[in-house]
Every structure is written in structure tokens, then in C-alpha cells.
Length: 310
Image (cartoon, rainbow, N blue to C red):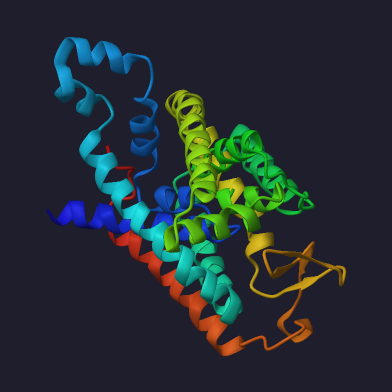
């Protein structure tokens, strides 16, 4: 019972993280020790499900997909996403600096926490640097204009959920780069508040895209994790390292022009600055406190075995 509660709470944390552009639910799974098991469970959704059903019915299918684990985790994630749509969006508007500082501390400590499990070699170092460069390339990308056609909504869902499974690469930030974040999030919020057929179509097609991305990408990840474990962990750690550029709490717009979508202005490009150069209240005391809190939360994991859950 206790393990189920903790697993559900990890799911809530993953759901909350996925609402924030630049923070990955995959990072939460990675640092809480459920990453490998999650990828293997998702991989179970393939053509083999029909064979499992024929041979052993529902019980065989449930075991193949690690059903109890997935159900508990996904229930928590749904709670986290629904909560995050309303609370995280509010915090991003009213207290953005402490919120970003909390996630910065969380991921900074996570790099140390995961990195200490690596056995360094030239190949591990290469993949660490590769992951860092790739993540920097993603987070420094220029947001596109987006496309509200349903086929693009489907593609956006597939790409976003693929990023969800990679620590340091946020599904929300991928949506931001695609120009879809300010379309998908308000649509989901409107559907939850006052359902309509048009909003339902968008949410449903986006969900189908996520399902497709989950199944297809999880097979590749599972293969790499099982056959190239150290190199993959180095790559994933590099993803988190590169994402720190985006998550640095004090960001300033490189240009003054903003894109207004759904009544909300969003800077086209941001760059990290020192608190003294921040164009607003740096909230230094609260930001440092939130950053320390994030570090402490991750370091508390060192009190438990560092292995991944099986």
C-alpha cells in the first residue's frame, strides 16, 4: 500500500513537471528510480498484446504491460497534469522566478545524483557531451508559428510525448518550439472547464498522437537502455545538463517583440542573465530558497538505494 502511494505521488510530480516548459516528467521518473521500468512497461503496448490475450486473457495482458505499476503511475500523472494546468500556469504568471529556481535546483542536483552512477570512460564522456549539445540546440531553438490543423496536433502529441520520456527535454518545451504550447494548453483548460466538440477533437487527436509516440519511441529506448546502459545514462544526463540553460530562473528577452496568442504574450527568445540584470524583481531570497529546496529533495534520494526499480 505504501509503495503504491509513493508511486502515485511520483506520477503526480511527473504530471506537474510536464506542464512547465523546459522541465521533463522523464527527469522525475529518472531521478526517482522508475525510469527503466516505465520504458519497459510502455514497450509492452505492441502487437504482442493480442498474442498475450489469446494465450492468457486479461491477466496475461495486465502482466505484459506491468498494469498495476502503469495504472498507479498514470493515475497520479493525470492528477498532476489537471492540477498543473490550473496551478502551475498561475504560478508561472505570478511567481515565475521562484518556480524556475526550484526546478533549476532539482535538475542541478539530479545531474550529480545520476552522474555519480556512471563509470566514466571516453565513450561515456562522448555521450555526455553529445546529450548536452543536443539539449542546448533544442532549448535555444526559435519557436515556430504553429499549425492548428488536426494532423499537426497529432504530430505535436507524438513529438511531445517522445520528449516526455527523455530527461531534460520537456514535452511542453517541444510544444513551445512547435508553436503549439499556447494552443494546446488553453484548449485543454477550456475543455476541462466548459467542454465543447471543437475542444474535444483537439484533445482527442493530441491524445492519439501521444499514444503513437509512446509505443513507437519506447521500443527504441528500451533496446538502448538494455544494450548500452552506461552510454544511454550518460546521454540522458547530458540532456539534463543542457536543459539548465532554459531553466535558469532569471531570463530576459533578447528582442522586445512578443507573440500574443490566446491573450497571453510570450517572448520569442530568452537568454539567461544575472539577477542584477533581470528586468523585474529578481526575488533573490525566495529564488535561492526554492533552489535549495529542489537540491534537498533530490539529495534525499541518496538515503535510499540508487538502483532503478525493477
